[in-house]
Amino acid sequence: MPRSFPLPSVLARWGALGILFGVGAHSIFFHAPFFVCWCALLVALVCVFRRTVILVVCLCCFALGWFRFSGYLRPLQQTTLSFARLQRVQGHVGAVTKNDYGQTLSLETLHILSPHSIQTLEGTVGISVPSYPSFAEGETVEVWCVFREAQPPSVSLLRRIRYRIIGFCDAPLAMTRIAPPVQTDRFFSALRQRITATMGRSLPSPHAELASGIVFGSAQMRLPADLLDAFRRTGTTHIVAASGYNVSVVSSWFLALAFLLGFRRRSAFLFAGGLVWFYVCIAGFGASLLRAAVMISAVLFARILGRESETTHILLLTAAGMVLLTPTLLGFDIGFQLTVTATVGLVVLGPRVAAACAPWLGTSAMVKLFAETVAVLLTTTPILLWQFGTFSTIALVANILIVPAVPLVMVLCTIVLGISFFVPSTAPFVGLLAWAPLSYLVAMAHALADIPYASFSLGSFSFFGVVVWYAALIILFHLHPSFKKEDAPISLAGTDEWEIVLT
Image 1: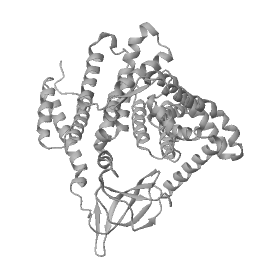
Image 2 (image 1 turned 90 degrees about the vertical axis):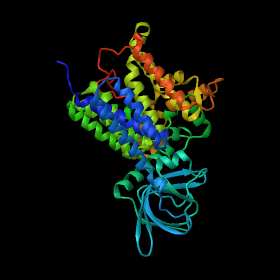
Image 3 (image 1 turned 180 degrees about the vertical axis):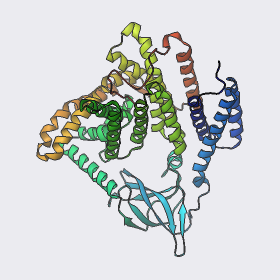
Image 4 (image 1 turned 180 degrees about the horizontal axis):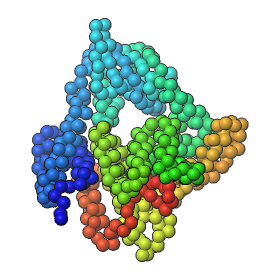
């Protein structure tokens, strides 16, 4: 007997797509008349399925995503911050960005203090201050300043919308620390500084900067410009700073450790999830790390419930929840766009590419790596072209040669860090363990980047081109018989029982 009402999982999946579609549509088109047009298009698409319930859920979630984006950006359109007089503002330091000219603080949870009242503001303000004294995330500061509107070149439009910056202060007249960070923030901040210093004692430059970036995503030790450009030209920038791939490697270690210690299945997943979040705390709560930790936690939760086959659905719901919480992620956060598209490439396209390659190349680990690399490049290339206009012709070869060495680098750097942290006198000697693989990464990046036409600029790549690219991928992998999905359920599990892969 046919089912008359869709399953809750089906409704949740279509609702998540509606939220993502609503936020994405409003991120591109800011004017209200487009809302009616998008609703009409969505009605036409969903009516093909002739399911009224699905149509209603999609429309409601589409409207939720659309109006959530509008409400989130309201402080930028109706700010009450005055730009014509001296003001006294108090807030929490949400982020500290260091550059060659000093540091920029993002103040959140704002309050305008006056002799007679305290006014609360939505959004954030940017404060440009010298390099010293340094400020820490989480502390409360008070600033006297004549604010101006956040406009380029000091604040780009993308950054302004992403962080909801309502004003900017170039030279505060006075700045006072009101309260230090909470004890937990102070502990992790001091731990990160000591880790960075230990890396600097154990390894020469640029190996120390590269190790800090790969293992912990340290922003205090910046890579030389030539090495950073080499990673960019070879399409391997994602290994320079701690990202989803690094978190996935760490989670695999923690799961392996849990199984070796004799934990049962559910206990092992809970143990690994807790250690993953501890690692994110040490690494500094970077946006890419948080996204990866949330998605990996979703994968672990799915495995605890025994729903490995529904991993893609859980990742979809997780992405929709993150976008609903911070709507600017979808249209204005390049890291989030790459994380989502790379995850789709690994989870959805990776097994199909591997199945298509199996008759000719077999099913070895190298074939699996090749298939996953091809899938990720197919799904992330249009985003890179749209945002940067640069295409790397050797990205596939570079990733195959460089990425497999990253887990070895992370293991050896962790060993070096552990020994040097507790026995500082041994730092120069144990650092030799990680020097060789780090030298391989540096040399390989430079060698590949020096190849003629390793990368070239395509100029502007329109959003319409991105839509056409993904439409062609959907048609190819959905209709072509060579790319049919394998019989085994798709999950983020690899050949090992505890492997989790996420970019």
